[in-house]
Length: 305
Image (cartoon, rainbow, N blue to C red; front, side, top):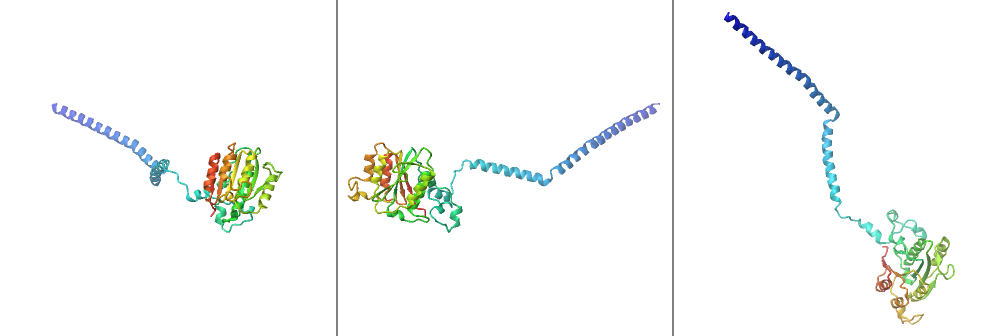
């Protein structure tokens, strides 16, 4: 009887072990069935949506982007450098295509036509703005103004700049022009008086300027004395050489007083006199002194070539 009971006990234990083994095995199988397809599908989905080369490219792009961003950030602190030819163009006269028509000039170099940029001479009078309502221009017509640059003579260059300045005057501004050598030539396009800048007066001024002949000597004193009597808002004085009127005793002032002394004596209202040395530095001391004592601006204009 004891033997039978032991047999039964062994069978019961074996049955429990077998049942437990089957349950655990079944659980492992179920878990394998549930999780293995999900992992496999995720892998397939990843491969189909983002191929390997895209993943590599994206990492490379991110690295490149970071590199570019770093360079941009660093460049913010780099000094700005202008191109040498741009600086040269800004400081010298540059002739535009339309400018060749004015004096009947032509360019044989296409590079000059298509690389031309607006110069400082196209604004105001050789870069100096005329402020006030009554503007006087005093222009040298001595024989040295016939010296020719690459495109035009000094006098043609002065006429071009003068016309540009007059054309830019507003409706409230008037102008008057003196030309000087040893003698003085006065503008009389609408009587002996200031003119407003209109198409008609501009055409008359151009015709008068282009009809003038150059003379000997460089003496602006008479023109300056008459200019002061007109009570101008500002005066422009352009010359390409040293004043030599004081060396002679003929004329209104003779050798009694220099141009600098005359301006100091007659400019009671302290009218600003803007002086322009055209292509020649010989007279810069006098021109600088005249502009400085009157509160004007001195400007040297170099040759075009």
